[in-house]
Image 1 (tube, helix red, strand yellow):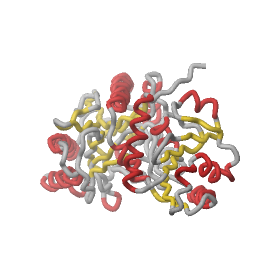
Image 2 (cartoon, rainbow, N blue to C red):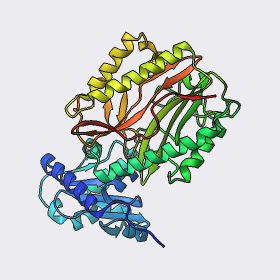
Image 3 (cartoon, rainbow, N blue to C red):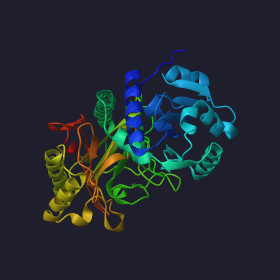
Length: 406
């Protein structure tokens, strides 16, 4: 059985130390990590359990299942969780130097993704250990995860290379008469055989995505619950977005918004294709999307407020008389230009109004100016970038141009 840790041990140590620095500054005695993605980030394992990180000292991963596998996957101390009803007592005993301070104990957790029922139970269990306050520490986690290490960037670059190769191969079968579903299956096959784990994770409640969206013609402009500029008919009420069984036709836009996940890390990329040619209106909009992303690249330097990129995009859209079509249409317009990516597809920062956080080296951001035309479709482009001291470096590998097919 060849199971070993994916995440370098030194990187795990650095992440924990960074979180402990935050905890000390915020007077938090401990941090309880519960969600799969956060567990993987801080200990390199997604086994079922709870990771407790003290403000001082070594963390412990309390595992329900599988303890054996967790020990193979992480360098952090692993203990069997045991009876959950005494979990609070277990923490108080193992970390007595923290719990016996005789003051209110602030313990943070990833409450943005913690189910309410589990929150109530944990509050009860920790309450048996004294005056414990279970507070929301999710913003601290998202800020830490926002800055990527070179190892993380290398994983995203690997995913980008997989997407580029898979798309190039699958385009050989993108022809008039094939269904969206059939061609998406072709794309997914090419991604999977190159190492895509088969899913793309999202943090947002009730937000889901598989490998992305391939939508043709008017179907792309059909809105859905997904927080983005394109919807798609999907395969029914249980999957009301992305591909359907619609047949791809000539002279209609084909939105190819696909990603890939390697070692947990995702790339996000969109290209627009057409068999034949686009209408004058759609072609104009596509050229504006290229212009917006080129202008965004120039603004993506450390210190620029994230909101500035969104504001600049709105200014360009207004000048091109395309404001009503930018990132959706009508009440279903998405109010952002881009978003952070990493272990999840919806990480910080967000390029949106009011998000004044300045860009920093190490951020990885997907920028996706798209235009939606009801009854016609969606056109646009999306690239993912690493913010460096010198500016933006594109991580996506596919040629950034309109894909014209005969």
